[in-house]
Each structure stands twice: as C-alpha cells, then as structure tokens.
Picture: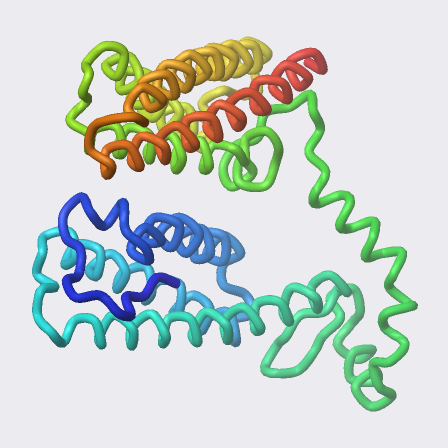
Length: 306
C-alpha cells in the first residue's frame, strides 16, 4: 500500500501521479475495488468471515478515495499529514493481510466442497445427519475422499468455452476479456502523463493523446457492453471484438513509436522532468500495446470457434 514516509513537502495536484509512493493510489483503487466486487458477487456467503473481508475492502476503498482527493486538492500541506499517511496505509495493509488469510481459508474449504454454517464445517453434498456423524469422526479423510470431485468441479467452473462470449463477472475471470482492466489502467496513465507535459510538441503528441483517450473511452464502453451482456453471444460481436482490439493495437504501436521518437530527441536538451515523464509514458504505451495485441490474438481465436 502507498505511504509517504520522509518527504519535506507532500505532493499535490497532478504530481501525485508522478511521485512514489503516491502513484500506487491507482492500483489500490483497481485491485481493492475488484476484491469487494468479486466477494459481493458470491452474496457474501458465509457471512463470517466474508463480512470482514467486505468491510475491509469497502472501508479501504472509500478511505483511499478520500485520501486521494485530499492529496489531489493540496489539503495535505500540514506537518501532521506525513504521519497520518503512514498510519493509515499501515492499518490498511494489516487489515488486508487479515482479510487475505480469511478469504484464502474459505476458498480452500469451498474447493473441498465444504462451507461454514453457524461456525461449523458442513459438506454440501451430504445430509445434515451425515455431517453430524462426520463431526464426531473427524475430517482427516476429506482431502483424499473428495480430490477427484474437487478437480472436476474446478474444471467445470473455470473453463470458459472459446466459442462463447462472457458477460457479467465472467469478463473478470476469462481470457482475453480479463485484459480490459490493465488496458484501462495503463492506457489511462499514457494520456495522463502526456497531458502533464502540456502536449509539447503538438505534432505528433496530439496523435498520442487522441489514441490514448479514444482507446480509453472505447475500451470502457466495450467493457460495459460485455459486462451487461449486450453482445447476446453473437458471432458478429466476436468479430467486432477482434477488429477493435486489432485496430487499438496498431494505434498504440504507432503512438508508442512516435512518443519514443520525441522522447529520444529530448535526451540532449530540455527539461529533465519532462524527459522522465515522457520515458514513463513510452513504457506504458508499449505495455498497453502488448495487452491490446494479446487481446486481439485471443479474440481472433475465439471468433474462429463460433
């Protein structure tokens, strides 16, 4: 988790996107938000300890949002804020560690076909009387007894046929749709960093800004369409998915090359800070291109299976 430890002046405004550790706000938002979205999709069952996991993820998401806004508007210039920043992120790290252990424990039990009811373990495939008998005899035999069933259930729940398009939370667990989030995160970083250089020179950085903002908006809309199931598992949408991500990959490749050319020209002269920002933007541009390229390849394979 991000924390500010030993700085004379805390960053504010756009500088929080360029300074360490404040740059970690974005991944904290993304991955922390995914935790409570995914846990909520299980209907928070069993409520103990998944209720604690939900509390931790929502609490840290809301507090980190407020923290981010405070830093962004520059209300953090008091001498007490560095200590508060360390304290909050340390507590958040401890909270998430405890939530991780609880969630891993429940996940392992569910993999074995066990759930927790009233604080007691219950095998979902057995009757109440059989479960009472097992509590008296012990649970040591469970792993070998249910290993074949565990493997079959995991294969059935995780396998996504290539000849179908996912919807709902399925886009967060299937390839290539799982790449929507890194495309949004790294693509958003590109236009944020380029915009912070005042888009100078406008040619070709104007093209880089167009590509990054266009792909960010389109990918966000694409993710919403897939999440809501508007594609209705149509082969036409499978082809459109391949075409869009192939186009986005080509756009980002051209933008990355143009940005790298401009950055190389700034190496011998100019503002060192702008030069470093451009280097970061080049790296993120090619990372985004990689995700779009892989997405396009996997989308083409899925399209052929329709």
